[in-house]
Image (tube, rainbow, N blue to C red; front, side, top):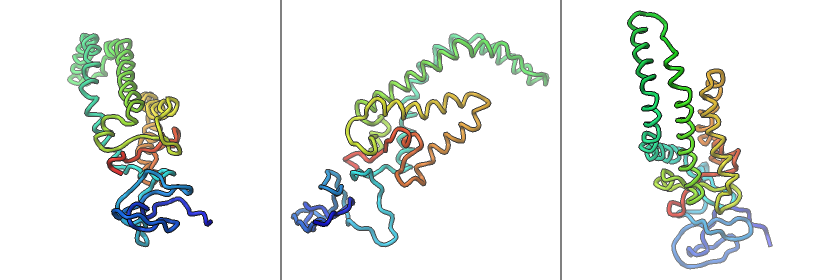
Length: 239
């Protein structure tokens, strides 16, 4: 028997013949054939695109990949969801260093009015222990939010609202902790190292490329997806 290549074909439950000519009578649609058997992934519309049309990219087993704009929308939603928590966590640390921050603000105002260099001892005191502890606390909140939801739902709340889900590219199912940690760390190491004035320019450019990469990547992966071997896919209700 001839081996049928993996791809989208008329769904054998849609009333059209499948790759081996098998019929079945329901609605028109397509189902993904992985090369050896039918998968659970279905989609509406014809199985073959017109000449020159771009087929929707999928994972190797046929799950439709998320587009760039939907990923941006999900990230913005997660930012908004986390913002109130971020403010509540950061507030005690700002109150802790309030006197030093106020002293630095007064010194900066005097320096601006007189044209003299700003006095920085107060600023240095303000962003030592309190500032460092605040960064650690905010990182812990972000990690708990992101990794917790990835482990529980394979998606953060922003992705869930946008109809997206995270998975390993080659293997469906729950995400292992190693995959989640690699993916999360890949972005956040760049963000944290970007605070270094020597590295900030290069890492800022790398971070920008990372987020833009899915625009031209044939697997719709950002650089951190490639490192962790993940894909963002449409949830089953959207696929």
